[in-house]
Every structure is written in structure tokens, then in C-alpha cells.
Image (tube, rainbow, N blue to C red):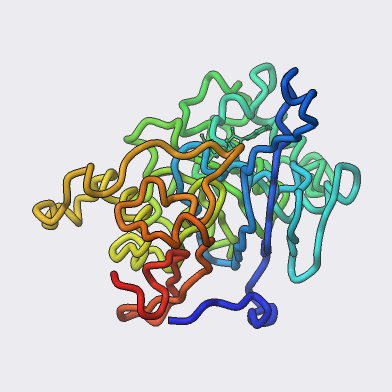
Length: 356
Ligand SMILES: Nc1ncnc2c1ncn2[C@@H]1O[C@H](COP(=O)(O)OP(=O)(O)OP(=O)(O)O)[C@@H](O)[C@H]1O
């Protein structure tokens, strides 16, 4: 097994759209009276040194429990937050924009879908208003009202809200949660983007309609050749929906690879813990193999103001070695079972010669 050296990372491959390298976000913590006296400046280490690549026609899942930094990553990639460090490249070009024309130009290519479709749609405006506005902002409204009408219809057809005229003049509250999320997706498509950043797009929907929305996103990925970042705390859905899965713990990426390998042969003890606590029908035959929760590592995620040294998971890890509490593990490439895809884990267990 070898350590991945970022210095010898491959040159931009044609289908890579959006890349993050060394992406870091620290939020300053408001100082209390005691801190004022000590002049100590505390920060929340929300995201540290994250590398991520999104490719056209592929879904990449970013999985982790609440507070692991997933939404912060999406907001950094959407340029909604100023980053503390690192680089974001769109088609190989570094981009850092803060509002204005450059931000609008970036949004045209990188669109975000939020968790709560109700909060992201204005209740006082119709679907027609929301979609017309998106088309106008991105210069895609057409030359006349007939073209605008056709473009509005096309957007609703793309998200399978048919017939479109049934939905255009409705208000958000007249639609179901799933239909509202489809409108949010249609609005994002109004920009004709290359990348969709979907932050927990189905977690607020009824279980019965989640699959329909995920299937729609999968269909759009194929038909429009979109790169999709799918943020979720549900690792079972990542297996179903994403080509690649990246696992985040306490602001750091701990494992990544093709979804089948990561979810069926997880390497990092944290990924194993996530999977063992999320029942997957295909793995029920292995129920007898499952260890009791206390044997898998338990406890709470750490404070991100003073995160643990070394591997951030070490206080909860049943396989922790002395080194884990002092040295940050690099990415170790792992042998891949049968599909030739890459698989890595940032865990000292995979250092050459380490006892598993
Ligand atoms: N604006 C902010 N100011 C200060 N701290 C923040 C801010 N936004 C997020 N954080 C902190 O950064 C950490 C990561 O938060 P983030 O929302 O990115 O996690 P998440 O994995 O998306 O969680 P969830 O699934 O609950 O949304 C958390 O500790 C959170 O409290």
C-alpha cells in the first residue's frame, strides 16, 4: 500500500469539472470575557484539508454524521463561504468569487439544491415566478414570451412535473414536498449548470417519495451529463445512488472510493461504524457477523473547537494504536476487489506492516 502524494496527482482529466484541494474552513468563535483576557482566538475546524473531484456524468456522495462538515463543503464549493485555505478549480481554473458578476457567472455553472424545498421557495410567489426569475437571471428566458413559455414547460418536463400547465401557476404550499423539491431542481436547471451540489436533497421528504427524487437526479445526471455532489448522512442511499462515496468525520475525509467497494467492504473503522448502524437489506445475511455496538466504537463526535490530535476518530476507535492519537494518518491506497476502481482510507491500520 502506498501513500497518495498530492504532488504527483494526475493532470486535469477532461471530464473533471470541479475540484477542491486542501479545502479548509475555520469559523471564528465569538470570544467570551475569559478569552478576551487570554487573547486566545478560538475557531471551529469545520473542514480541514479536503480533496474532492467531481466529474461529468457521475454522482459523488459525501457521507457523514451531523456536524461532520458536509454542508460547509457544499457552501464552500458554491462560493457562499469564503474559504480559510485551499483551492477550488472549475475546469482546471482556480476560482474565488465574492458576489457580483463573477459570482453569477460561477452560479450559472455550479448550482446548489437545499435540504428544505419549502424554505428555499418564496411562499408568496408562483412556480412560474420562481422559474422565470431563474431563467432571466441566467439569460435563458428566450427572445419573446412564447419562447419563455416553452422554456418554462421544458424545465417542468425535465423534472417530470407533467402536464406543466398544472403546476406553473401554483404556489409552493399547493404542492407536496416531493413536487416542491422537483421545482427546486427545475430552478437549478434553469441555469443549465454543469454541477449540482445537492445538500441532503431528500432527507426532509417522506420515505415513500425519496426514491423518486433520487431517480430523477440519476436520470438528469445521465441525460444532461451533470456532475452531482450528493450530501447525505444515509450511507445506504449512497450505495444505491452514487458512483463514488467519500466519508467525512469531524471535518476530515477518512475514506473514499467507488460506492460499491466503500459500502460493501468499508476499510476505515468509522465507515464500518456508520454502516453497522445503518441497516442495509443486502447485508442482512451478515447480521450474525455484526459485533455488539460497544465493540465497534461508540461515543460522540468530538468538539471541533479543539479536535483530537492525530486521527480525529481515535477516541472512539476500537482499533486505535498509540500512533493514532499523535500522528495524522495520510491516505493509504487499498487493494481493490474486482472492479479496478480506486479505494483509499486515512487510517494507520493500512500502513505497510501494520497489524490489522
Ligand atoms: N456559520 C457558522 N459559524 C460557526 N460554526 C459553524 C457555522 N456553520 C457550521 N458551523 C459548525 O461547523 C461544523 C460543521 O457544520 P456543517 O453544517 O457543515 O455539518 P454537517 O455535516 O452538514 O451537519 P448537518 O448534517 O447537521 O447539517 C459544526 O460544528 C457546526 O456547528
